[in-house]
Length: 177
Image (cartoon, rainbow, N blue to C red; front, side):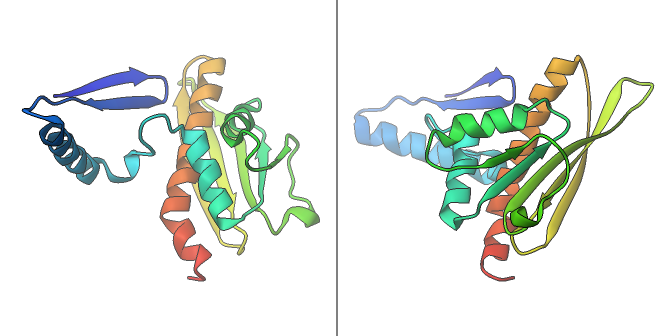
C-alpha cells in the first residue's frame, strides 16, 4: 500500500506491506520503492528523516564548496532553511545585501532577487547560481499568494533547485566538465 502525506513544500510517500515474514515484507517494500524512484527521479530528495536543507548541506560538504547566499527576496527564508539543515556541520556566508565581493568569487553563490510583481498578483523572482568554476545557472520563478507564504514557498523552491543542480550539473562541473 502506498500513501501520501502532503505538507507545505513536501509530500511524503509512505509504503507499507504485509507478508508471511519480515523478508517478504522487506522485498515488497523495496520493489515498490524502486518503482516509485524510477518514476519520480530527482523529485525525491531523501528518505526517512532526511530534510531538504540537510541534503543540500551534505552535497556541498561532499564537494568542499563554500557557499554564499544573497537573499534580496525571501526575507532570509533561504538562509534560515540552510542554517537549520547545516546544524554545525558546514558553514555558510549569508549576505542580505546585494553584490558579490571579491573574496567570495571562489564560492558557490546563490542569489535570489525580486524581479517584479504584476497586476495579477504574481511576483517574479530570479534565482542565480554562480558556481565555483564561474559557470552560471539562472531560473525565473513566478509565485502568487500572501507575502509570508510566497517567501516560504520561494525558500523551498530555491533550495530544491540548488539540490537538483548539485545532483545533476554540479557533479559534472565538479569533475571539470
